[in-house]
Image 1 (cartoon, rainbow, N blue to C red):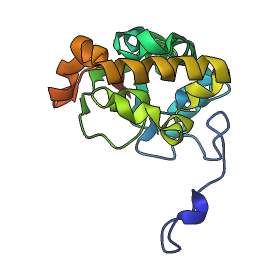
Image 2 (image 1 turned 30 degrees about the vertical axis):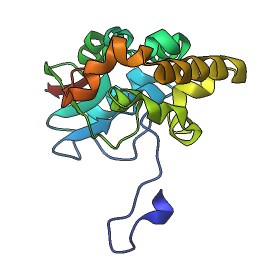
Image 3 (image 1 turned 180 degrees about the vertical axis):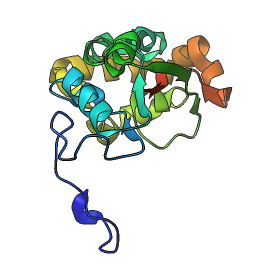
Length: 187
């Protein structure tokens, strides 16, 4: 991704969240967008964001408790279980960041192009594409047999109309109130 950056933009810093190469209070604010579930040590990374920010720390993440609400849990429960284990609870994130936190649900638009699982809440056919699944890290925790079984069941249910009978209203929803949460923690 860094190689694709235009040469005229500010240099990208090569660092990890748990060891940010900046002095205390170096920034007016800090942000982490859908990444904390990938960190080796979430608490240390959150404390680092707080350390380098003299103002708010803003986190876009998922509420693990809400992940099971998506239809995908019926087809690939292990994907949902893996994701739920990877995301720290919203309360825990707020506690580690300290100060005063607000938590806002972030609706997902029907035409969301980001590619995370809930982005396809009303477009299940997209998950039949191996390239789409390859961009969702949770699928990498499944065996080939588990993935094949889940995708075969989804393909069959889409072909028979079963998916639409059960979840078809999602195709007409302009947005989905899923697991996305925006946390704003002020000192």
